[in-house]
Length: 458
Image 1: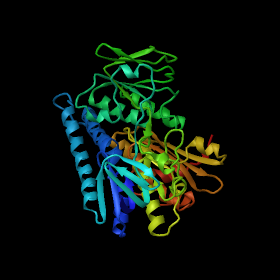
Image 2 (image 1 turned 120 degrees about the vertical axis):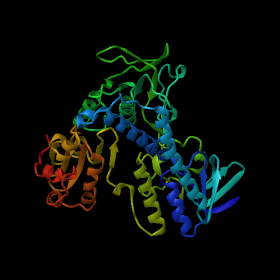
Image 3 (image 1 turned 45 degrees about the vertical axis):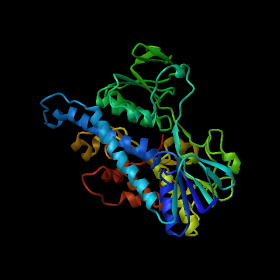
Image 4 (image 1 turned 180 degrees about the vertical axis):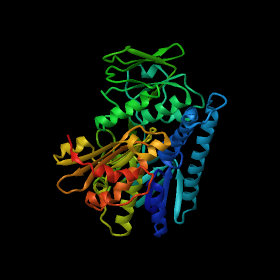
């Protein structure tokens, strides 16, 4: 039996900084990784997809050169092997950096292999059995493969295997009209594929308000991405040189045939092979580890961080999980998951930046809400860049006069929305933002103008 102060299972966004913090505090730490260091974000999530989105943006900009007075001599050509090579180089650099970091930490032993609980705070890795005062689970998730009729008889791609292709699909059908599907759809359309997005719900990204969904749909349709909604009876069939998706939509053809299909319908946690019952660790019906506000599991001194706990599905929420646990353990703090304000982005072009409540969420809480709205074509920076799609919207609680939510769909929206976060955490009145002076020309400078046009939310 190898004894440690802490065992950390997984090297996603929470595990490595926690190992670093504990090791430098004099704790003896064991880090376990069965695959590639860095987790989803580094290997097949944020880092590779945003690298490829950058390539797709350049392709689109080159295609629009004439709009800016720039003429290209030849038609724009995308070299997919080079796009992939660039992505691979960025990923490899990030992954190697994490592995080197973990290997160089003081008081730390790195184990390679599958971790499995064999008792309370006892974990087996290969022929080694480790025991610790505290165990931290940071195993992330993987693409969910739905139980679609015919899926077992056709070849399909997931958000992970999409990272491996170095060719351009002739016609990519994407099952799933949310964040992953929309980002890949626009990306590969800009590379040159024909793209059809199939969504079971009546609108795209159903967690967002209808005005956001409709605007995103219009942006994608303007790039000739085909969108099929209300696809209630999905099924897959092998076709000559590709795959057919039965959609049974309310209008249009009942089947769509393409060369490749991407299943982008969500994710599932990597918790099914950890032996959690042996440690008394409870999960919900979807396999997510149940945690309290301080990220404790049902087992004493065992914590779950990142995507596997179901309390956030983003790199930044996983990193915040680490901050909460580390501050509570080492600094005697009392931080909680419920203290954080939801914030995230959809990285289509233009991006959607979201913080706080949506219209629907505010209504469900029965708040009196004021809303300000402005189309991006009224923003000088957007006009100057020739990127005027989208809008910005800010919500204010009429009683407390505090900002409670915002959606900025437009150029720089993923950055501009963050200018509201500090005011929200500080619980400042919206006038503190409205009366501030901002740099011109930027997207953020129009937020005070939006706040000056507040009206009751319809």
